[in-house]
Structures are given as structure tokens and as C-alpha cells.
Length: 97
Length: 228
Ligand code: SF4
Ligand code: SF4
Image (cartoon, each protein chain N blue to C red):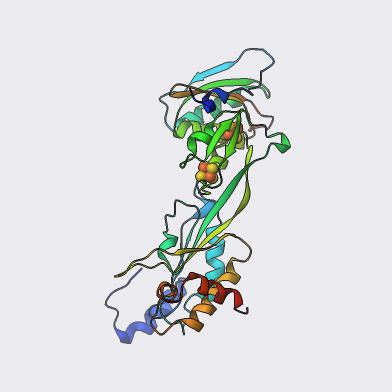
């Protein structure tokens, strides 16, 4: 592990407990991984966390960015081998549900 | 688009009909040729520069202009992927962005390392959980800015890298970097470069050949002293 690897994830934020919703999106291709994430987020209440697993490459570069641009917040994002564990907080914008 | 076998007698009719659907005849010979541009930021995910609006401005002012020493081509690319090959044109523009970490406005970096992973030239390293950017390596493609999930990276400088003197054909050569992070002044720069080119080039000499002959520094001086 080099210096940069050690340095990752040190500033992750904790959530205030409560159930964490979860989805394993490994093997899911773009843009389906984002579509599924988006639909799931819309079922949650603002402030609720959703944890997703995403593959490296395109998925990890696209899904968190899309979530942010739709008003959700990325609380944590950590590499675990060839995939990433991402914690997203449902934003306060309504999506017309 | 090329329409072959139009008889000279029909040229006027064809031009009129094209005009009705909003198309103009292309320019050939020693003139300002049609400007080529990629989609840029309005459509492409990688886009950094607004290629469409720059292309429109240059097109309105210069397209078809005659009285040049030789043909003059302009290519405008939205980012360093350079899909439209700005380095192969007499004058090329390429959208660029130089990143900086900015955690104001609550955009706190979570030390995820995505920026480090996406950088194509390894210009970023996380040090104590924060990205350190080596600007001597950075090629300003803005990938880190576009991929950061918390919005902690923003462009500190943006605009166009300007290339001059590129060309293809029998003796291809890539353009030189003339300037970096040009923004508002882009159209004025076209005027100056065109002015210096017309003033200094021999007949049938491309911009690249002129610069080969007098050197980039001389050309740069000529452009700067050009009155607009
Ligand atoms: S991508 Fe953004 S949040 Fe992640 S380490 Fe880089 S600057 Fe920090
Ligand atoms: S702009 Fe591109 S080259 Fe520069 S640091 Fe970011 S990803 Fe790397």
C-alpha cells in the first residue's frame, strides 16, 4: 500500500445510525447502475443513506457524480479491491414522486 | 458535404435552392474555410469549452473571407481529447481547465481518491487525504473536476489553448502552442493572427510555412503589434 492508498477514506463522515439501505451494483453497466440508484434514492426520505457497491472504471466515475448533480450527497466512497463502496445521502430536492 | 457533377449553367439555381434551406456554398481556394468544431460542453460529457458559440462568432466574422495568402482552416475542440484535431489546423482552439481543491461552499473532500484514479497523467496524489496536484504534469483535461463526487475540485483557470500553424496534406505538421487559457480575447486573437499572417506571408504560403520561415517568436511579436 503506498502513501496515497493509506491516505484514502480518512475523512469519511459517519451517519446518525438508522437502517442503511443497500444495493450491490457490481456487474451492472452504465447507465443501468445509475437508473437503479436513482429509483432507489427516490423511494427514500430526505437525509436517509443508501449504500451501493460499484465497479471501478466508468461506474465509479459516473454514478456518484450523477447523484451529486441531482442534489444527493456523497458521504463516503472507499475502494475495496476492484470495486467501491459508496454511501449516498438522499437529497432534499423532490423528484416528483 | 460535396455535390458532384453540377453543371456550370445550373450553379446559380443550385445556390439559390441551397439558400432556401439555409445552406451556403463552401469556400475553396485561398480563403477562410469552413470552421470545424466538436459538440463541446453542451452535449459531450468531456467537454470543457463552448465550441458552438466560439465557432459561430468566428464563422460570422470570417467565413469565406478572401484575399488571404493561402487557405486558412480553423478547428475547435472542446477538450484535450482533441477529437476535431485542432493541432492540424492553421488555427486551433482546445478547451482546457486547470483544477484546484476548493472546499468552500460545503464541498468537503472525502478522500475517496477518484481524482487520483481518473487522472490520465498521474498528476494527482492524495497526501494526508487531500489531492495534491502537480501542475507541471497536468494536461488540463478537467477529468478530475468532472469526476469528483463531492464537487471539491473546481477550475482555477479555464479557456482555450491556441495552436497556430498546423496543417495536413503532403507535408503535414502539428501546430505550435501560441497561448493558453485564452477566453474573452479569442475572437480578437483571430483578427490579430489573421492580420499578421496576411502582412507577412508570401503568396501561397500557409501559416505553418510562414512560421517555419520566420520562427514562432517573430510571429508572436508580429501578432502582438497588430492593431485591431
Ligand atoms: S475526487 Fe474529490 S472528494 Fe475524492 S479525493 Fe479527489 S477531491 Fe477529494
Ligand atoms: S485536469 Fe486532467 S490531467 Fe490535470 S490533474 Fe485533473 S485529471 Fe489530471
